[in-house]
Length: 133
Image (cartoon, rainbow, N blue to C red; front, side, top):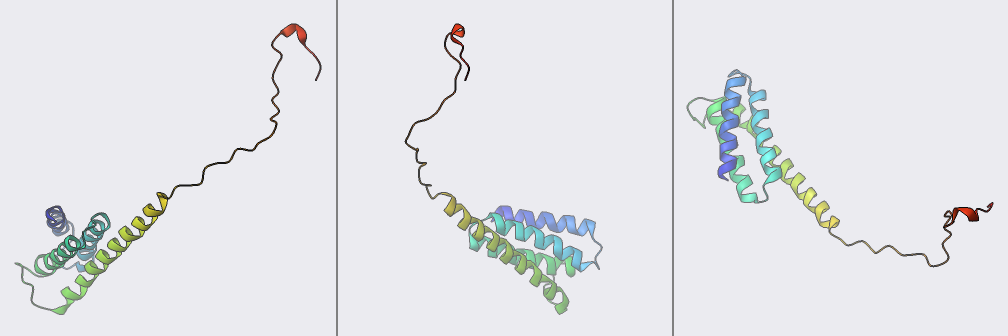
C-alpha cells in the first residue's frame, strides 16, 4: 500500500506540472490510469481500495481544489468517479488473468506413440553396394 501511495503522490506531482489547473479531464485521466494499473498488479483488494480512496482524495483536494479542500463543488467528485471505475477495471483485469493462469496449470494428456513399422530411407553402409532404388 505504501508503494501505491507513493505512485499516487508522484502522479499528482506530474499531473500538476503537466496540466493547467482548469484541465480537470486530463488530470483525472492520469490519476485514474495510475490507480487502474496499480489495481491490475496488486492482488489485495484492501490495498486497492485504500489507494483508490487516496487517489480520489488527492485529485479532489489538490488537483481540482486547492490546499487539500475536499468540500466544494460537485464537479470534482463527479470526475473522481472515473478513478474508482479505473480501479474496478484494473481489479477485473487481474481477476481474468488469474483465471487464465489457473487453466494453464492443467496437465495435458501424454502424446501417444503409433505402433507399427517405420520406414527409414538411409544410404547403405558400404558405398560399393550401391543399388538403384
